Length: 218
Image 1 (cartoon, rainbow, N blue to C red):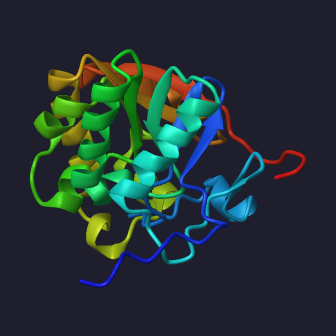
Image 2: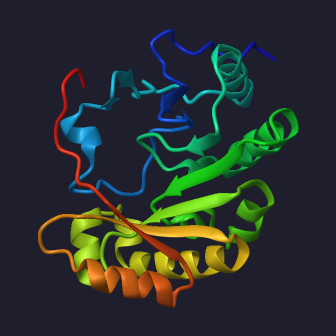
């Protein structure tokens, strides 16, 4: 068997924000959200270049990157969140969770997701997520199905039934993971009160998010 191809030196596998260490597993995403900063920020985030350039880091590379970061300074949580949908790499994500729990048992493990994990994997995954994660944050952004399709701009296979799949995912996660939060980005035309009502009906917590637009040194 040939050795695994090394990640390019420019690849950002983990990056920091506040007291969290964020894991950049993939650039693959089921949506091209019209408000997503990866387009205006050109795949950069606060000084980090999150473009993987065709190379998704291996499990060993991710764990090495986390270990290196831990030696530099501590972090309170590991968050699966880059400019892609981490549930495309469900098995690797859960393997990372298991190792983080073993090596750093006090560190929280969280997934930020668009909520299409069941549809991507072809099965309900909330119980699997609950086995490795402490928290899930699901970006819903609207309580209206037609508006969801417009805002989230999903791939063709998720346009029909995608919104309903996200709602089922939220309900399933809320039943399995106590810290399940639904979020919406504050932007014109969004009924945040309706979003909050829907989140609470589905059993989840609720949080508004600020619309990011520009910053220096992006």
